[in-house]
Image (cartoon, rainbow, N blue to C red):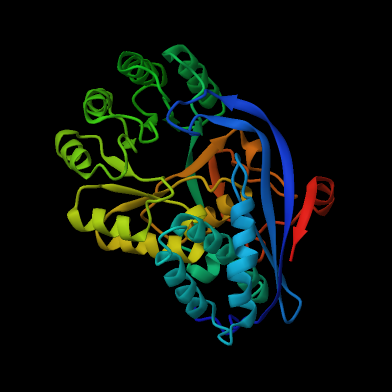
Length: 386
């Protein structure tokens, strides 16, 4: 990371525009929770952090489903007074204090981490603008693009639907595909694994993500099918805190386990997994860690020769934050291109696009690289919290 001469920041104002959208329902209902469905009325917050010199940094709190009111209110109630009244101007020092606050808050730990993550992205947007530089250059850019894998949430109940997805991705020149099998039976899931590999051929990179929905026996049976069909990883097969099953699966399967996207899976949990050596891949996202935390997590994984594969951020600001971190590390091989993109590409002029090689190139604008669409925000705003 570069030694910044302009990273001293005095924050004067923080406000959040609450925006509301009604989304088309996509996916299947999942009796394990909200893992299989997007749609309905969604509320998210457009964060505006303004410095004493008038520079505004932005980010978004909330993802492509559900209500983010609790997080929006917590930023204004808890985080805003700390930031406004802080005598410390160096963001790294302020972040460490806020991180300790989030880490030690047992009741709302995941909520506090997501609040801090959103604030962190807005502050990095400011740092980039102050230095007239994309964030990844400040962090230490080492590459200009990254391959993607395409993925949808669970949408089908048998292999035929997933072959339709595979055909779509192949026709769009994707070279990697992550299947979300949802609550399909073991038999149907194995059929999907086999038929997708057969259809896409041996060169296509394939992954499977059941969203922590299996017990040990189902995970073992499905995992053996992944081994036979040369899948790249087996993501979140069992609950993240089922340590015994994770250890046994890691020992019995050739396909590496990748964990975990669950909100409660934070720094302490990652450290324990890395210490015990039961995972070859870990999962991270700016949605939980922001840019500062995600970069730290990737560096932590690097010390154990472990990849940190970065998952969707749930909105365009968090996805762009993911991208900036990816440009600065070697131990992440893919960007998660989560579809339908309209679920998280909103409130901005720009979108995140694939190039002709189905890769995503590094942003070039200062800061996060996004411009708020003020007309869209005005038309969807239901409140402003200050």
